[in-house]
Length: 284
Image (cartoon, rainbow, N blue to C red):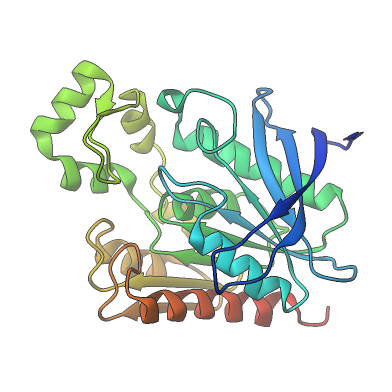
């Protein structure tokens, strides 16, 4: 049934949410549709632990991923077990959210992350952690730099300069083809090209996060694999140097961008959940 909250109109539906085998049993979460400032519907899942809580982590997924990623599901289990709720949402044009993916920009994603945080604050969560994976890490950095209600930040192989990564990944010839066709290769390995306007790249040139990161003074964790084939390691190192306040950079020697090895994935998710628990559950 529908409820209206400021600043967004929100629709709630109880749904069963089954985690991957070995992570947890089936449990009930709350499916939510909220809206950004442009009126785009954003699909989300609010997962709360048993009993009331004012502690929550808002999770921003990676490029061509979604709210139900394995990382989000695993962090939800770990955090719920420590009395922390999670709020996972799909960016514009991805997962179950509205919009053609081809019109996505980093600026729009930041606006949607801001709407998610505003919604959680309006609904009584007073200790909020922000988590970002890869592209979602860029969004999380840019969003956190604009706010004073974030208690801590955790970043999984964050993109800091997406334009640089795209130039390295695609090369100049592919960038020219992108500009001419508004399509890119499927970065997840599929054979079909993905429609994405070249304006995404042009927006990325304006959304480089090193300078904004200097405004972030909340405790911040960065976790990245030294074998990351997508995000250059120098981006995380420079980001770490730019951040103010308590910060930590965890480099996993054998991990790739997807943390494919089970032990690397376990270390990454454990590090992030421990960081959030230690900084969200402190007495204020």
